[in-house]
Image 1 (cartoon, chains in turn yellow, green):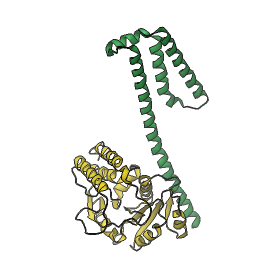
Image 2 (spheres, each protein chain N blue to C red; image 1 turned 30 degrees about the vertical axis):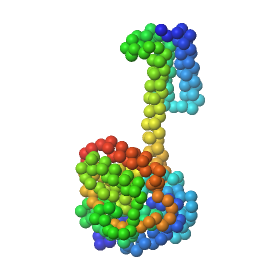
Image 3 (tube, chains in turn red, blue; image 1 turned 90 degrees about the vertical axis):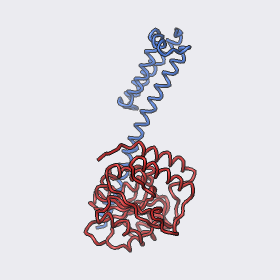
Image 4 (cartoon, each protein chain N blue to C red; image 1 turned 135 degrees about the vertical axis):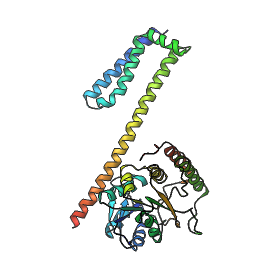
Length: 235
Length: 117
């Protein structure tokens, strides 16, 4: 990357033996980025693949779920002094070609957080999600709007870049169950500049999404409650 | 009016609780800190059993038709408080355990990296 800032790509992976190597290789094509895979206590061959291919990784000694895994990445980034951290899914949903687009506004200090968004200025084709999930995303988006006065279109996107300030904030406090929308709301409430850039997402290459249809209602209520009860103007 | 037998039963029940708690603390099965809420419950039950007139007085305020309902309501409220307190502890411990797992895992990576160098 055309900057002296140090960028870390955090790739959370839970039982992603089918996709993790491919994902790592595509991210590696972007020069100047450090990568750390957070193996969230997988019980398939993920660990073996990571070790054999000498992929830098932290293996959680117990499964913590997506939030706990990603937070480990932020803690690592904070301890190792990174300026920018990017979250990139280990299941092959995100495209490495979009990495620069997501990182750039943070590098240029135009934003504190950039979300790779499926819904803003929609690029045709690519990822389509279920009706249930889209409804949930809309409800959460509404809650964020109500609470922060800011419209976020893709609240559940796990493709995001943050600067040092948010690395430190997330290292200290990050929701373990449904981190994306809640951390987005937290960032806005902390007075951070949050920006969305359009990206395309692919269908998953392996593993299972952490959001399963029958859990959608619970997910929605949980997230909306958490957002609405957040403290305001915590600067 | 609180039936005499019920009074005695409540006092005995409360005392049994207190004895069990003290024994548990001595055997280090429960820490004093987390036994507080249970002591509060036992003492409350004791007071209800030992001073029936107090219960009558209180019921004058709440107006239950049957005093037993007041006692049951009171105990349910106490249990709810205990449960709520436990929920707080669980949330706190989950946070601590998460942090522990994360830090240990990061340390393990650093140790492994150090070995390879």
